Every structure is written in structure tokens, then in C-alpha cells.
Image 1 (spheres, rainbow, N blue to C red):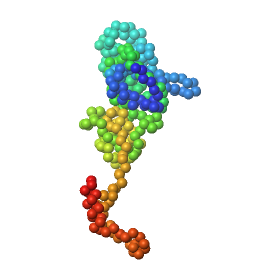
Image 2: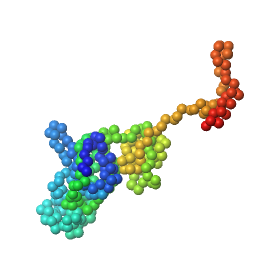
Image 3: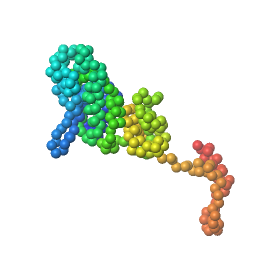
Image 4: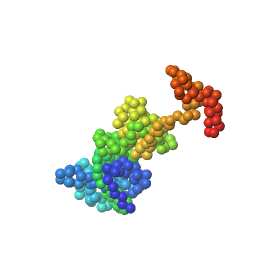
Length: 291
């Protein structure tokens, strides 16, 4: 089933998390208005296979990777096109060219970085846009290098490089909230030092604002780190509950013999007589028997 929505309601990190956890295969298209005066639309396409990102591009003409190879000067566009026709149907173009000795492993890594990591990570700064995920769209083998990246790795890289968090401000956990771990052991992800420090507080007992103070971090930075831990499936936001009011029994046990108030005699002043100490002790015993 095709899924559509808006990034203002469902952010790209949350969308990536959903696709990865669901092991989805298909084409994610993001459409945004780059210029409100000319209403020029820009489309971005990201191909998923079993929840992993395998390719990305700005067009659906199946020639994006060929253009990148030609731009690098490694081979002419027409030559790449002819070689692509000799590749097996289910073989990624990049891997096919490597097997033929046209490209090296390092060149494939550079192509994948340019095509996927650089292009996709830039999308995290989008304040709004329309998205569609089509699970029936075929995987574009001519756009694939043969390398893959998990949606989690791309999300971490994109959010770490993000300078303007305006688009995600409403998605950040509240400074008064705590974090609770959703994994049983330490994460397998390559967290940076600040992420590890915040991770150590995912026990649900301390507010993010206090964590930031403890780690000497700005509160906004602690919120951003917490958001990264949340959208990569490592933690959840948990509102901290206010301490419940003390019960009458707690108060009596804490102070079984309250001091007499200074001032005029309450009996002489017409007030109710003070409660005797024996009555208080009997009341405490009665309450304990009812608990």
C-alpha cells in the first residue's frame, strides 16, 4: 500500500525509522517547494531494500549514477550506458562495472557517498515537504552502486551534520522529560562521545535539563542528542512524574509528636483543644492495621 504524508507531521528521521523497522522495500519520493515565488518543485528519490538504503537520486530516468561517473571523468556517459546493457538484470550497475575492471572499490565508495550520504543527509534540513512511499516500485539497478547503508546510519550522519534544527524543533523531547532505554544491552551503533554520555542517563530518573547541566551541555544540544537516540530506536521519551503529596500516615510517622505552637493558649482563645499524644499513637496504629 502506498503511504503519503507531509514532513511537517511525520519527520524524515521518524519515516526512516518506520521503514527500517518494517524491513520495507520500495521507493520513497520527497517533493518540496524550493522557491515560493517560482513554485519550482524539487523531487528526491530514495530506494529501499529490506529497510536499507541502496540508492538515491533526483530523477527517475535511471541515469543518475551514469551521470555521476561521467562527471568524475572515469568514463563517458555513452560508454557507461553501453556497458550497462551487458550487465545481468539483477546486478547493480556499480558492482557490474567493478567486476569488469572499470571501477575500483574506492571509486564505488566515493560514488555511494556522493549519491546517498551527501544527498540524503541534506534532506534532514527540510522544514516541510510531501512524501510518498511506493512499495511496488521496482528497484533501480542502474542507480545502485552495490553498496548499502542502514537508515539508522544515514539518520545519525544527517542529524549530526545538521546545523539548523528549526525544522525539527517541535519533534525534540521536552527539557523536563527523561529518557528510558528500549534496548537490553549497550547499543551496537557507533555513538560519538556526547551521545554515549547522554545514553548513560537513559534510566528514566533525570530530566534532560538536569542531564545537560550534569554534562555541561546546552539544553538544546542535549535535546538534539536525545532525539537522535530516540529516532534510532535506542531510547524513548518519558515524562517525569511529580513527587506525590505526602499521606497523612507519612506525616504522622515522620513527626509523631509535633511541637506545641507558641502564642496564646488555644483553649483560652476558644480554639479546639490539642489532640492528645496517646490519641495520635492509637490513630497511627489503626492506620497501619488498615494498610
